[in-house]
Length: 302
Ligand code: GRG
Image (cartoon, rainbow, N blue to C red):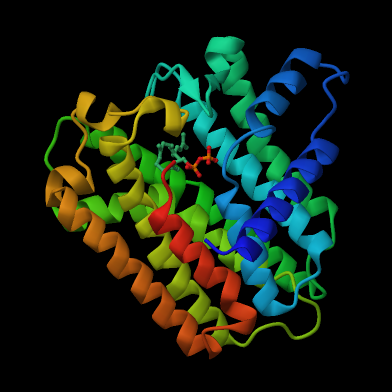
């Protein structure tokens, strides 16, 4: 990881934290317990991979950073909601997230349910409240992209398949279908939204297609690495309970392919993502951050 990438990453992470802090309802606003719990779920943690992708795609499009702040906050609201609900006893039943007690443990189950619901709707309120694209039709498309990526045709659908798969054996295409939805859809939407935050005519259809190809590879690579880390990394460095997949008898890339082949697959997906960037126009300059993020996703240890 180059020092300039590290500086850029920290800068974006700080911007996203500040944007969420500013945009989320204050804990002093009634209902105070719900607002405090929403802030507990969304602030002060996480790698902010999806905002980093939105900012990097925005760099390709020459996007306004103030627009990227809003889009990133909206995406993180959806992401935080999904983690809160996923950790609940009716789903993954976990007590640790980002190194802290999960929301239903820190507060209670009903509050966790409402936190997820409220963060989800907050995301769409942010998109409705701010100008994010010069063309109102593009802004409407952004809302549609985020809705599709979050709902039953995207992340929530992937989660349903995941819950159904516990204790079953899946084929590789079935596992891939599940993860393209559960994890990949929001990652793909992050790149798509960042790329649409530019002024004027924006990127061409061909450029958006290359970016989308990149995003699909990164979305899958992210999940393959997540499976590897769940198998290999200790709970302390993950900030969440390690080894849950095997404990829950869940099919993963590691259980299907073996550790070595799963790691190889992540690297192949990174190379495919890099090839999509090359088609977009060169390896350096405007695509540099996206290329560095592809390495970060594959080489991360948490
Ligand atoms: C409840 C609708 C609904 C969906 C849940 C995202 C998800 C679907 C479940 C989370 C479970 C999980 C471990 C998924 C694998 C990949 C993933 C999304 C990991 C968590 O994302 P990170 O690593 O988390 O970006 P941070 O904490 O860094 O933001």
